[in-house]
Image 1 (cartoon, rainbow, N blue to C red):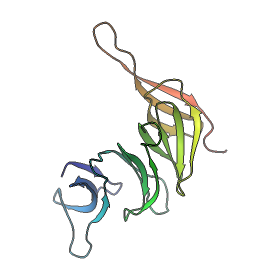
Image 2 (cartoon, rainbow, N blue to C red; image 1 turned 90 degrees about the vertical axis):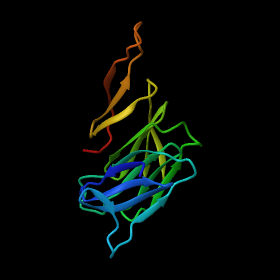
Image 3 (cartoon, one colour; image 1 turned 180 degrees about the horizontal axis):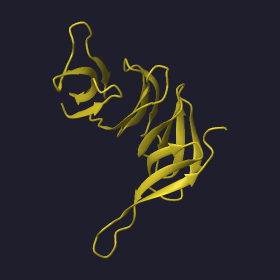
Image 4 (cartoon, rainbow, N blue to C red; image 1 turned 120 degrees about the horizontal axis):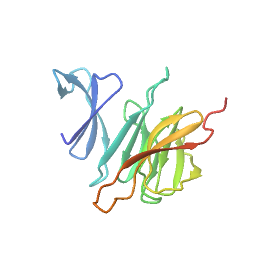
Amino acid sequence: VEKVFKTPSGKVLLCVSKQKLVYTTEKNGIPFAPNHSAPRFLNLISEEKVLQVNWQSGSSQELLCGILTDQRLVIVNPELHILASINSQKHSPILSCLWCEFSLLFTTNTHLSFMTLDGVVRNLRILDHPNLILCGVYPDRVLFGYKNREDDKGVGKSELRYLAIGLIDP
């Protein structure tokens, strides 16, 4: 097992192992597949690395998961069936992602964009700083983190920045 990501319930895990993202349960802190249900898999592309996993929260609907890898951004359901996907090879590299209702916001070096469940991708805004990482989403603003330039001693400071933008209608 290379990486482990918790799920909202805390009783199941997403594990990266042997070029597969595995959705399994946990028993005594050890991932295992119960006899009555086999683990579910999402096959990764050769040399693909999972960078970030975000679960949609606050919904009574079926849970959705946004998975950011070094090659793509994917929205999957709990069975790990792909609902929508974007290849980051065709765009600027995708740096981060966070849920906003039923859309997955993401950043590239130049844009704040979103992907819907049916795979529609739209740019929301051109970003004035490169390498902004999504930290929080609110109805009227988005919070970003970024590393400021290094000083003479080679020390860089992380800073937070917000962008006022109307994401959700009142």
